[in-house]
Length: 454
Image: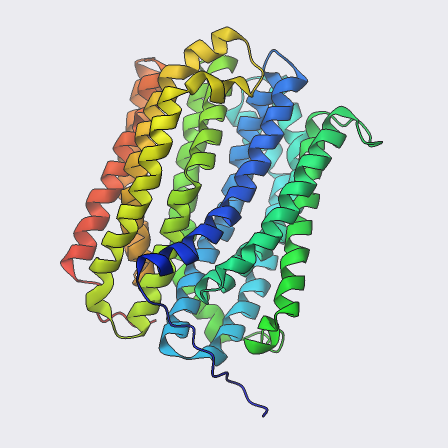
């Protein structure tokens, strides 16, 4: 029988198994970019013992992340919308939302490429004091930015699968992307496997091919499983003003929220660069650790967004606090375990970067601060993403703005005015996550989100 709907249900339950069934595949999907980034940095750490490549990677990583975070905002806004339609049983609307999101993000990726080619030289000239560092970073970014279209479509695909409670299919793209990235990093950075030795720029090329490979594999899986036809993903490529407006209305506050957050990270790294190359290299490894060991927390956060939106779509608003409590218990359990490992074996984790003993000695106090921040993040971000799931994304933006203002004041005073230690500078993460928690917790408990229609 032909039609525009399917009898399959995409409504979720809120048991522990249901939460884990959604969260664990998401954690692998989030892990891939972190593995790629860390793999790049491990190889770059061995490229020169002085840490020049590693410190430059910190700047380029944050710059690219500034564009990637736009896709993350679109991802989370779209994910909440798709999950809401799934909870409401309006399956015929999902394909329309997905196709419009692809059109929007391709336009955004073209903008990002143009900005990098024409504005990045001026941006870097103001932020980086070293001419050598600036030239190396610019050369890398003009290659790396071509991965943006692949990344954006990859993120929209994640939103689709998570929003429809089919996160298990993310794993195939994860495996493909990881394999391609590691193999090409090894080949293109050092000139192995019959490939040219491109040094620092080899990491950029390998990342682009890895993103493209992961994207291709998952779309093959989606086609093979019949999901494309089931959700009518390829039938709505004409411009749809109504759904485009809806996606932008829900996602733009998140884009600004994440953009503000990353700008604060850029500001933090600029201040760190004023403390020397070692401080920059240490901070880059801390970002690696934050990203790698925070994947489970981010996965539970994404699960919170989708499940909160889905059960609200089912008319089960009163069960939202119960769901949040269950997810927080799981998220904190993983985070505490990770924090214990990092504090017991800090030197082992730092040794993979191939730096000298002085680097490890200086980094160990910082890694202890970061491990504590990971625990704080594990419950704070669940409440923040619960706010996203309610559809009140402007509240997310307001929470972020308030927190970031105080965060930036703190890092400026500590790192630039008072010239305190790197460890004290990284304590800004404690302040950040506790502020996020307090504001998000208050909003969810206030009940002001109830009755929101998206």
